[in-house]
Image (cartoon, rainbow over all chains, first blue to last red; front, side, top):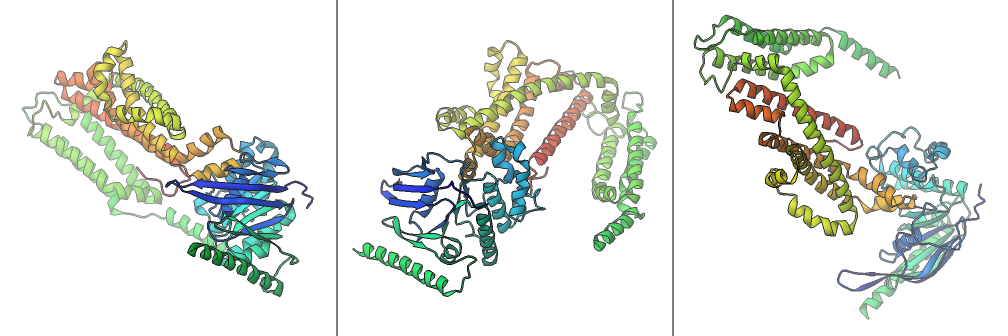
Length: 263
Length: 333
């Protein structure tokens, strides 16, 4: 099933600024160039304020760049679309809909619910929520809500799945479970994945490539290939080596920032 | 599975067993005492009317009904729980009628003109129920027309103001200025602006519903979490879908509060309108009977209003609970 030829993302000279209430201009992203291959799993990691969430929101089409452009399969991204599914740290399930209705939401608003009806149950099953179709979001645990949120994005068959710290609010055990589930889904569906995370281990465990970003100036510090074969073990030497390497880069980036601060 | 089965069997045994609760006897006892007092204590000779059968009949029906429930509660657990819980209140309410009957018909301790005996109030229902129903129908037509217009306008304007900056800019100051004016203060203008007092009253009632509905709809809409809109747009929703599938359902709890406030002020406006000039409403009836010093009819009218309005509110809360079933712990009425 991994024959995904679509889902090629490219960022060219991307720049995004935010004007703050006091009139100061904050550079969220400056001259960012990235190329993400179809079906690739890419993580963005960096200190808070490095613009990684801005990167994701631009890619989702929720905000527009001030300069440069983002393309998906060579088409410029102008506005949000079901082709780029988004999963937040907060599951943001619609509380007035059941799990089933939440997952079916995308199909219903696109008017294809009638033809694709069986897929709703398929995706609920895929994320392991069978039997909870009629539950309302407030009755779910954090992990279950996030699974439902994942199914809701996947049911649209997006070319790209954008994940903004999707497991950040979960306990360590649930988090590791969900990471394995995500890998399975990704391998089965071949969707291009772009994930923002704070967790270096998570980035190495999941990704083909890790984009390490710095704040001030908000840009890409380095892009690291993760050439560890899957399934990965968290305590192998390669894993640990990469981990210390990334931490070093992040630490260095932090010091540079401090230096600049003193100057 | 076996434990579930056992529990079910136990519940079955529990509910089928005859259980007696002394409290279940309170209401019929209270009804019996009231009936005895009414039959045995002689009417005050100063009470210039021939004896009426209505209160006796009503008490016999009450006695029978409460006895029936007492017997049913021996066998059915849910009925027993509800009935014994309410038993003190029901008994007290019947005893209050007893007291009122004694104070009026039996002892004549308070002015008869203003405080007619239960018999005479019941007589109004027995003899004038058709006219009362007709009045209620007129009121319902007036209230219903005004209410539907007001609620529809309120929700529409509320959505527009809550959703669009432009609407908010132009209409919000108007709402803030005009809204808080009690709709009854519009009476002088309404009466000269509309061809009939019916139209004027519809306008006043619509206005009374419109304001709270608009304000709470718009605040509900503008308080929808932005993340819901963002998620829905990445799922493919367009603007119209965001309004009707995200904003509206999420604002529903707030909209209901607006509608409830509107309902209460619409009742008030209805009564004022009817006392001002609309013919054949229940409010008009009360006012007319008061002028004729027929206080028994006034009380009958008040009872009709109390029962109807409380029924309307109860139905609305049922609808609300149904619609907002997804919420954790909705407020109970």
